[in-house]
Length: 508
Image (cartoon, rainbow, N blue to C red):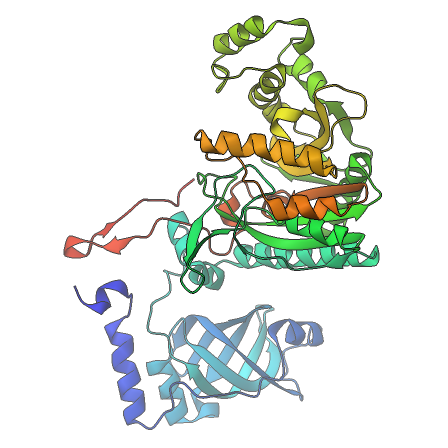
């Protein structure tokens, strides 16, 4: 198997490069004086008529379509702002330059053009080309123009090609960039400070998740990829920063599906002297503002649902959610009755549950989550699955924790943060015992974090929001792979006779 088996190079295009070099044409020049973008040209000449403009324009971009008509050529040129039609005449360019374009410029090539603007009889704003320069000769062919790039797996594996061919994809990622900028702006305006915490950590924590492991040769030490920035951000609160946040890449060694990717983005926010009620208010404010900024209103559609983000949102306790969606009062039943109910309804994990809190969490996940379509806060979680949340001030066995659900997806997770170092030590010891018994998602003991709490952390509210799912909601995409530029997929390699082997990984 040769290196070329991994590539999609077109030998005809490679031959053209050799011919151009023999003619003395620089195929990959170093710069081009681009003075205009497509959007600027269309805005500036929106009222242009059929006569050529006196003003000259200079624009560069990729050629998408070439249509030859004897001594004239029409072509479509696109940049990051849009596309514009080119009009080339042999009489204007001269025979040598015209033939150079006709013979050697193909769809996919990048060129720079200088010319004047006019409107065709069909009403299309067009650049009448006076001169052009080949800036990059592509050697891989673009997909066929009428069908474009539709294959889902190819779009995910070759995102660069997806972005070249599909304006909808480019718009999705423009929106993603804007959402993150708006989120930062929101927090900066409220005096939060942005920090960066370690991605490589000697002890993982901050969430219940299976980590990725790696090894540092110089330290002779196993390290873990961050599953959450929580414990480091809380150290900063201990250190005297009262309002902090981080937009972080997290890594969790879990299944891949439409809502999960092993590498994902979150924003985690902490504020001293606040509790989980304040964090619910903050989360509500963030989502409502972003929806209005992106859509110009507080409503948008997702997965066939018309979602209304106007405040206030619905709030119900986890016990109320189970009573509403499972039809049972968790406190009125014995543990034996709860297990029988769970087995009857095939609730995953109920055969090993031993406490009322464990059954409550399992029943909510099974019966309630997917029913929560409109923005809904579910609050007051059992202590068994909330090792970093403060004990509830009035409900025995519960913690001050909430999760936000929209369209059946968990979108945010927040606490009144546990700041009692003795309680935190006991909770993490229970987690570590579970881990040692084989629970791959249980947390380790981070003694340095417990020490930090020992120096005193003020009452603090915290919340983590999944950015990828947030972008899904605001762009109407029902798969997380649509909003990740480079989603994780199983590697494929050329097999015998050029066939590819490996997991499909693309079509949802």
